[in-house]
Length: 470
Image (cartoon, rainbow, N blue to C red; front, top):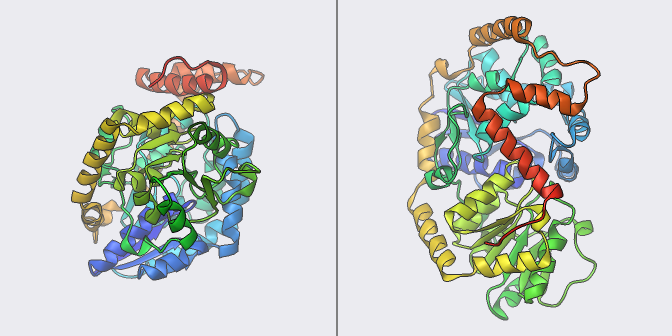
């Protein structure tokens, strides 16, 4: 029996995959402990997983409300920095470090954390030489760090390095170097989703294990008034923006206006009242919180924000999808939905009622429904957790899967030499565009192409009219 410690933060979509993996490890006879927000303790207990809280349950709503601060570090660097200052304090680091290091004292311990998010776990691995595996939750994350890092985004390294110094560790000079020190990365998506858009050669290397499907204990009873609403007519649509508030302010209102064009019966799940219209027609039912795993099989389609957890639930239920996606991994996820033929994707500039209504009609075609059923069957026949468990079990007792202190020292020394020899000369008074141009010219051709694509997407969202349809 091994001792697995799973560490993650943020939304349901960021936490539930690790809870499901922990539950699967327990069923295989291991000890598994989830270390995350206190709000998830009840779910962990229900799943039979040991739990340590990094904060109080009542703190979680504030964490969710503050997610808007990190929705786009490129366009809103000041907000992103303010979020880091608030949540990346030395006290928070120390509390999490103490919990993880104590749990790792048992024999055959293995750390499992979310990539980028699990930097405290990575420091524990480096200090105690504990094998570590990172879980990557969406395909775009295998390239995102490299691009944003070369644009000069800090990603809290300036806050992490003083804490590392107190542990006797060398400074981190780049996230790509640090992530590269992790020798086992698993991707929580299937091969079909991965192949929809090809990753460049320099992307983070991951072993795809499949979507982390909901456990049976997540299928909770639905309120009687909702069941009555569903039974009163044709299967309704579902509109959900996930648990957090990392959304465009008009997400719910835009989705609802599109539904109103068609007068389609719809369930809206939104815990943020300020994001909802003041009035709704009687064919739209609003609920602040629902167990979505129980809702997906009962709806005719899902209009969502492009979050990977929502995509997983929708695909499992063979529900056609419309992603109104903006920022982080979501546009990339939306494009994969469209290329797989299981739905459509609209960027924010396209969130006009007529366009959304047209997209809703499109995802209701027999071809889309058949494709959804086909992929749902493939998901049902694939045991994601068996593959994921096998991957993390493969590092038990193998210290070579810990973060190598000597490698980190060598990377630090190499970075210092490179900084002296190949630093980018940009005048102090240069504007942001001058700086971006200078950095862009230093990138490889493939990175420049990907950067250009992402900047073009942002420009399209802000300036360009939509041309063409499905």
